[in-house]
Length: 377
Image 1 (cartoon, helix red, strand yellow):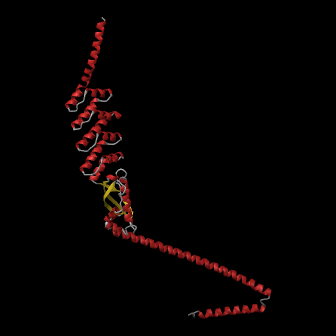
Image 2 (cartoon, helix red, strand yellow):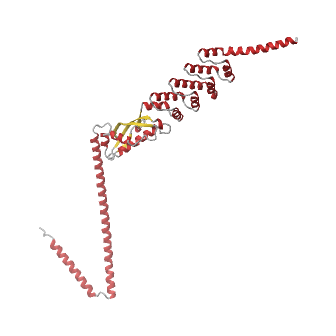
Image 3 (tube, helix red, strand yellow):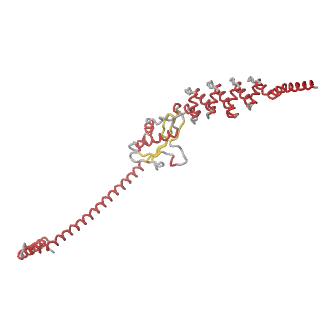
């Protein structure tokens, strides 16, 4: 009985050891055949190891098949390392698809570089597409520069496309507010002009990481246009040759330290403020200027008249003041005469002689006035 028991135990153990491989083969047989038929051979031990590490064998095999079909020999360890970082199946497929795109375009990028950039927060598909576009356009764009631009938050693919095909920026930016759709500038003759420009720019790859954005270009161009108009002697010069404004702005080097290179600045619209619908702008402005001059001259004349009236009142007040002084002086005469009588400096005969002289003088004045009058009819 003891011998039979030992034999049964041995048979059970042997059956278990035989059953485990059978179960493994049964579980992964379909996946193994799929990989084998696709040329991406995977061993049963690799599949078992993925299962034990809680990695989806279906995901890894599918990703390896995709790479092998594209001509890239990726081992399962590299693919598992991508999945195990965040256990997200999309990480594996994004990196593999980016590698396939790069390989087909002869862009030398490894799966490790793509993995590092992906987990750093980059966009590997856009990165590869941008490098392909740059390579086709004969633009020197290295992997390090591409990764720096992408991680800086810039759209690397749009930047490369803008380098090949320049884009147009409205200055100022078009908004729903009609008061903000035109630049407002004043020439030296005081005439307000409304201007709208279109700036053609291309990306500057070398300055894309640290360079300023489109908003800086718009602000600098707007400032340059306002300054150029402000230095013009008359609004007629601006209306006659708006291209001079563009040339002057371009010569200012407005694209320095920006992520763009200004190709051209075109004045799309320029008009005199508040007279855009008037046919003869010059006549209207001359009429308004004449009216303004008239009002200014009238204001100056009224100012001078007011000053004259004020001066007249001042002179009248001065006369009244002087008359008051005369009255005060005459009031002192009797006092002085009384003092002279008391001190003996003036005698009574001297006083009568002075009165006679005064009366004689009055008589002579009266005769003189009577002689100058014209005889009555």
